[in-house]
Length: 166
Length: 100
Image 1 (tube, chains in turn purple, orange):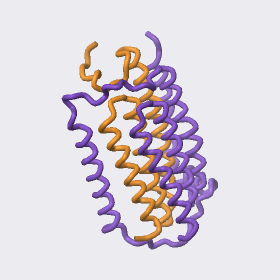
Image 2: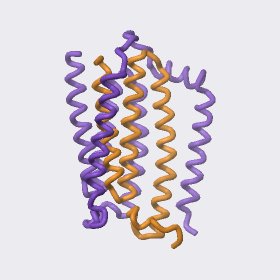
Image 3: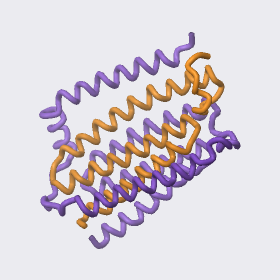
């Protein structure tokens, strides 16, 4: 543990704070920025977890591509200001119920983690360099890799078709 | 309790925050961002378990989750743009009817 755990703790606190900020922010643009901070924190955690390739992919794909798309759409639509009367009268129970369900979910997950997760058997670090990832992607995972490319093509065509002006 | 347990707990906490946010927000874009947070929390658990068991498969699965998330965001945001054009807003309460 030692210094690694201190880094984890610091990054985890920032990640949780960013997630809470995203959930509570009234401005959708601020929420997007909080989410970018959260993704960057998770990228650092990937580095701590011996996954350098995924850390870089997290920064480029999530904070680079996906969140830029989010910010772009929010700015294009001018939808950053959320209406003030978001919590309506007839749904007054929705917020406490959601909070209760969320706490229940967290308690369940923590219970499972503390009772069912067996202590680690593998102590040696695996080779997770981009070379090893690439060999696995074009070896045993070749078919899912090709399916993913078709999925991305379909998403691209779908996005173009959906946003086309009539 | 081993060295990946804190990561799993953090993942569970981030997932719960995302779930509560999905349930409470009314703006479709905000709900969408919360779903991204939940996907990210699941990815963190995948990577933590990959380290715990000393196998690369968890990391590869995260790679595919990222791919699917990218596809999902592209289509989902296109849908939100189309809805915004038709409804002049992204409040999910206004989307309760299928016609007009």
